[in-house]
Length: 257
Image 1 (cartoon, rainbow, N blue to C red):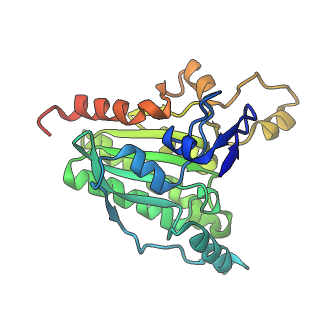
Image 2 (cartoon, one colour):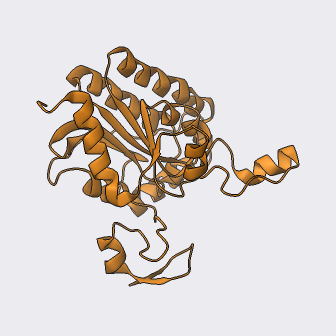
């Protein structure tokens, strides 16, 4: 019934925090969302139609314990994989959308995740619709080795086709966006948005400090730091995300969509 804010320590009533889109009323900390919550907060009610719900990961390297890990993630989250893709409307404008869920093996990208994102981009091309991806990931899925790393090139090529077709791709970076996902489709959006305080980078600040033997600046790899240094376009509070996305899509496709 009660949740403690990890930033300010405030004790929050669960129902109140949900009503506030899972944002701390005291300090503005953005709690992580499930894919279901993200879709509900973003899309018009009842508009979502899911793609590829049965597309799931295999065990290409016969990695010990991986099938059990997948089964546990599916049972815990109710998801078949770490990303949910589909089609819906935002303020009446049709979009193809994908949402990564960090509860599923830290939203790591394996063959199934890469394939679902690629198919979403292909459908956006076919239907001449904008693509919106909410990104959260710990990186490539180590249990799939090179197969997982190949998804970086695959997803990057898929969103390149959107660009060639003159279609809009909006990438929304949430906490955390790291590893091979940050080094591929996550940072290739025509417009890159981020939620406040989101950790964004290829590797963590502790690893970087140990490598370069230097102390990093305060807020390094956080969304606000990246905006100040020109890496992303805008940091958008969750309460305004739906409105901002709707405006961007409207400006791109025109009011006649």
